[in-house]
Length: 104
Image (cartoon, rainbow, N blue to C red):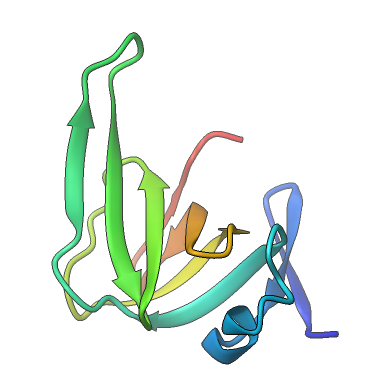
C-alpha cells in the first residue's frame, strides 16, 4: 500500500496517475502532484449560498475545487481530495506559495 500523509483531519494516499487509472483508489482520499495543463475555469454559482467552483486538469485527470484559488496554467500543484473514478473532488490545493482548502 502507498504511503499516507495527513492534512487537516484526514489521511491521503500518495499515488501516481497510473495507480489512479488502475481503479484501485476509487472512493479513497488521495494526493497527486503535477502541473496544471490549461487555464483553470472559475465559475460563480449564484444559488442559495453563493460560491465558486474551479475546474482544471492535472496529468489528464479533471479536478474540481469548491472555491477560487489563485492558480494558473503551468503551476506545479499537489491536489488533495477524493478520487471518484473520472475526477478528483479536491479538498485542498497546495502550491509553492500557499495551501487553499475548502470547509470540511
